[in-house]
Length: 575
Image 1 (cartoon, one colour):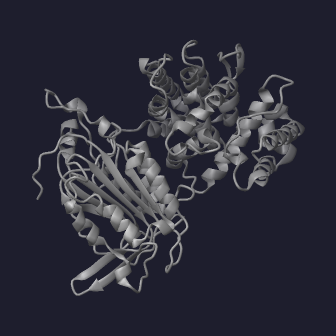
Image 2 (cartoon, one colour):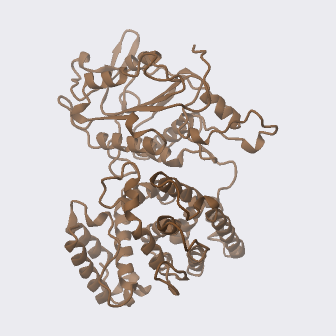
Image 3 (tube, one colour):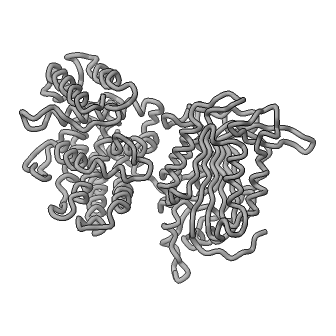
């Protein structure tokens, strides 16, 4: 047992991330390399320095390369005692049975199932982790194999003092996607382009596995992934998880830890740490649950309006916090920090907008209009750094997306209209007076589109703002709407509607233009855009969007705009 004394939090963070689709001697996989890239991006988003995240993909992930990369963490000088190390592997697993039971193996890119010497014995990794000085090592394995010897320890609810205590204790933990003789679902995930296991893992890292205080621990992540993968109707997997050694816990946001030694009354800091033996549960009715109860009850219309107004009051007050000052800050790092802070503030309102956009009765649509109008007309700085002034519109832009996608999921063009065309009295730059909400919001976000390239993982994206939202919003919409593979289709359709609606309501005489999204540059290119346009207006003059007032109620206007927009983005080199 390790008895070394550790500090709260972490001094440094390291990761080895491996993903193999292309094997020399074994059948290929479809999404393992993309899974690894997604995990690497998620780790940098959770505070791992990009230079400390080593990524081995496909042919580069040979047995020798993996073991060399892993063993460089061994020895007293390689990792500090207060460091953390995460190891992720996505690829084939294999199990052999001997006299003492099963032994699990990972299959490297040059591995051959019939030759065990070319494989990586699982317990070779766990035994060698004892040679590593880091207090916390977490193994995340998207592969099925046997031979895992783990224990599960139930943690009591704790305050931040207890949470800090967990980071002062030694731990070696593991989560594997499946047990022997189970087939890992490669490509059946809720995120396009990811396996089922890694899709839920990424959702958990993006916040779905967090406690109410926003803390994600390995215990909580394992509980979340176990519950989601094990209960998925398309899953044949049962994740295996637990502790190999120690009783500490790997924490993904150490910056949220607070020293609490001087607390006289720790109860305000009580943090429920989810354990792998139960799924994450809410101790009280959540906002989304309350809204689901109020929406269908006509007798609760006053309570429903009070609920929405209270959410708005809390949200607007938080958005007026001094941390969102328009005065100069520390540049690119602060951009992402503000982005995440905005997202945290609007999180309850996202669920409200999603549920209203899908389920609101016609007389309740005005609540959606009220949300967008109040947020658009809230006080904003009119002088200072342009980037911060423009970014202050991001919460509305984000809500437009979740509401718009939810509306399109059931062809609710009346609620889509509320998300895009609600009249608001707001000004931005040269725009003033009363305009559809889409105008100030989109003008602002277009102005800072390149700033999204400063976010790790989006530096080389053609449409970084669109790609960021695509990845960020998927788990939020999935939790409420269970869209599965439809998500990408609906996201692209919404962005086309956003672009064409923006082009429609701009000042007369201006060229046909709207913000290009992912649809404008995907490999399918022009065909993809044309297909979306065709599918949107498949009902012709009976299209519900026209009846709701989009495009002046005329199919000819939509066709004129869609052709003009196609020409615009073609000339720009997108299609």
